[in-house]
Image (cartoon, rainbow, N blue to C red; front, side, top):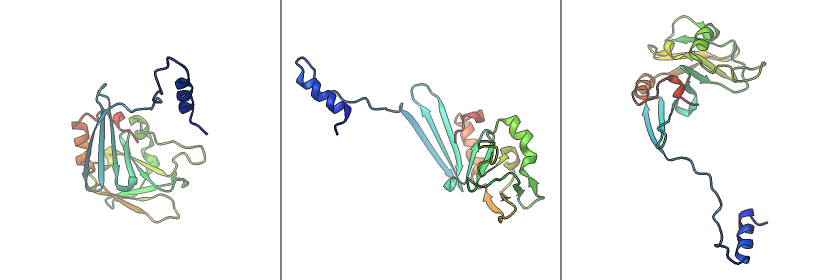
Length: 176
């Protein structure tokens, strides 16, 4: 089967006065400049549209196990897990239920409920960045029947500061 643009080119060539085969329209992304930094367990990618100057930033942990969005960090577990009863500890301190942070998550505009009514978190546990700034690690028990998983923040604070210095402010400039 012929591609539509090839068939049109053949018809065009058969008709006198046609300027020859046309190149099909191809979608091209606008030219962007890219910047990437790595520190510890974290990565920062910044893309800037060269024409409009618009900027998009992505700050995430290695293997995309955690990502910074909307002033909070989302820690990823299995997508089908309902993490509504998740509990976390910062640097081994007292445990805290992540739902206690919901008022602050709402205030800062974190997109913490993305799924349906049966699993609104889709395996994500959201913690406001403000809580993580002075911590070195977080242990999260995503479900009562699973062992806690520990995440480290080596590099997160420095990359966040670098992102802000390069124009990734306000936090709405961060994308998933």
